View 1 (cartoon, rainbow, N blue to C red):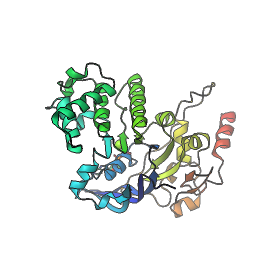
View 2 (view 1 turned 90 degrees about the vertical axis):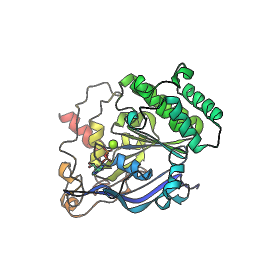
View 3 (view 1 turned 180 degrees about the horizontal axis):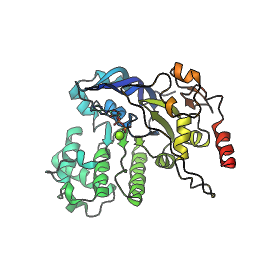
View 4 (view 1 turned 135 degrees about the vertical axis):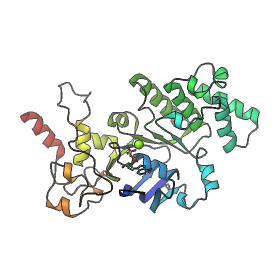
Length: 339
Ligand SMILES: Nc1ncnc2c1ncn2[C@@H]1O[C@H](COP(=O)(O)OP(=O)(O)O)[C@@H](O)[C@H]1O
Ligand SMILES: [Mg+2]
């Protein structure tokens, strides 16, 4: 089997705060293949962005630190790169798109200048060539009047347009991996769908793998091959999108699914949200981190931390002590009958 594009192994990223150590990402492992579309989903505060920032080496010591683990990208551990090498990786081989494009765009430079700067940083081209590449990049993201857009400033564009520019910038150097962190969360629903379609279409054309971070399982269902669910700094379930939707193995995944409006089914399902609040990442509960919110917790759940293990269909994994014993799907159906 070909080696994965990205292999994260036992990554732990902690922040030290006045209240104590925040274990934002606490021992996650996963792989991402070339051209794969991987969704990372979980409630706010589950460690999704810190995962992305760790991969990009954007965690700033001394406040935050990758305390252990490896992040192997194309066979080399990014954690061993010096800053000069990382600058080459960032934007050149791994591009990142954030929820708020204004955090990445500089308000005092034109769109054209910023695109050209990125292009010239990563490709050995002249200014003229960079201009042409930038122009094509704007056309690729379907912004009309590319030439005049080169002269505009970020604040003159709508949120959707700015996100298109970020996609243009991200893909202008043909990266192997695009990390999109809640790229459309700030946009209205129609624009969201257009931007997602555009981003993934362009990524496919270029053979770029996509790591799509979102709190929205609906987005994952529409756009990803594989998905992993994060909870309290860990991965609690992973599998193909089909597996997780048809046959969730972790009660948390099941809870997330319940909070989705089921468009595929005619009858009106009761909307369920996961009761309770996410755990403090400073004082984590003993055993399973989801235990205080779980309807199925038993003694062992307080005693032992559940590791990811095979559960459900081949290739599916869940970090639940009871995963192979609970049949969540039939429990849901029973509940719906008696409700
Ligand atoms: N710079 C920081 N200092 C302290 N804690 C942080 C910092 N950045 C993130 N965290 C904490 O790490 C946890 C995970 O955050 P994050 O990865 O941003 O969550 P999300 O899944 O919503 O993207 C949260 O509890 C957050 O408060
Ligand atoms: Mg986030």
